[in-house]
Image 1 (cartoon, each protein chain N blue to C red):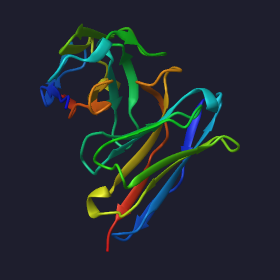
Image 2: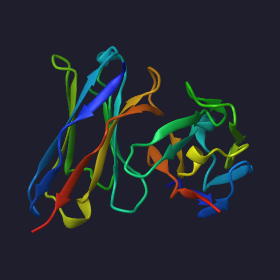
Image 3: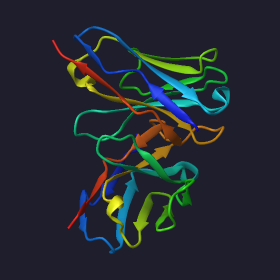
Length: 109
Length: 120
């Protein structure tokens, strides 16, 4: 079973700073089928990045995804107030077919 | 615009069943699969399963296998998720989501969520 571990659990930063969120898989993610989602309280998730590094439609270029194999990173440059939320990574193709990480909460310092 | 509109909140007793609907509009419903994901209060996201609207192919999470059925109705552009033998730990917000591309793997459009509360 493929498990995604996100760290840190909580990240406290100020607007304008840069953020680095990590997602580590217990096994290699098939064909880098890895996505990042942003979720704000009371809302559904929002797709940010897919294929490890491709930004979804309408996503600002301050969001970037990197990585391959088992180690993946989401970076957010120049944090805006609306970026403070919970971020999840998700893999597809392993066993189980889809897995989410437990999330990283990005909070205002 | 592309959107998914889900049915309203439900309160069920343990052992009962719930059927959540997800009505699609603004795109070719037949061409994209639908995933179902749930989120227990204060918890993370949990994948429940996926269905191809095109050919009915399904993949269910092992945790709910045997209790869940996912279907679609192309005449009304609606997907359904039925969960049976409800338990208190099934209490969650249930989301449907549309595949990003013709191939499954990512969800780009989500429904607004349906709160299912299981309580005696």
